[in-house]
Amino acid sequence: MIFSFLNKYTITAMLCMAVPHLQAVGVQEMSVTSSIWKVVFSLIFVIAFIPACLWLMKRFQFAQMKLGQSDINIVNVQSLGAKEKLMLIEVEGERLLIGVTSHSISHLRSFPTKANSFASMMEQVDRESSRDNKSNGDTV
Image (cartoon, rainbow, N blue to C red; front, side, top):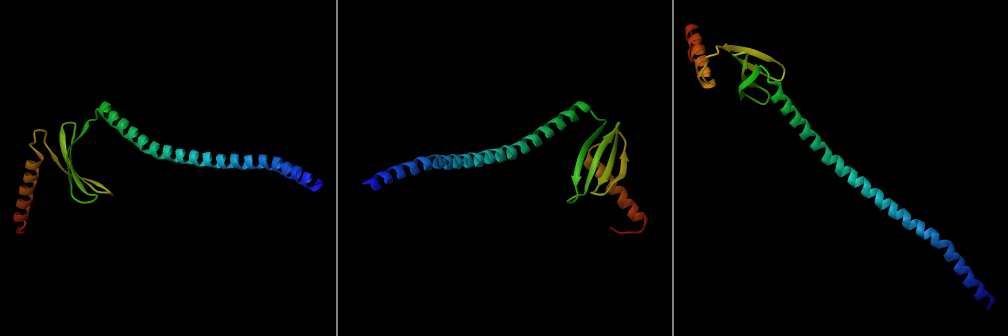
């Protein structure tokens, strides 16, 4: 009988000592779970923040271009390949045909201010180049 009485108190004492430990384990599990959620929400925020910043930068650059009123206007762009293109630009009333590659920009031709469309300019260049080829004896 004494042993059963002692066993009851021993078991009760052990349970009293174990309850705070079990509560601490629950708190730790809750702490780990909340930490994981904090990390997930932080990651989602960063992933959403990057495109938002890029959009704002693009928007402000467009506003600066409008307010800047540059003397250089791009009239037309014709892509020739992955990194090559022809650009017809207008600078202070004069139109310039330039070739743009990833490594260089080359001035190809200047046009007077009263020039027609880009297509008519290209036809004129074709006619002049065919005339030059014929005068050199080349056949096209």
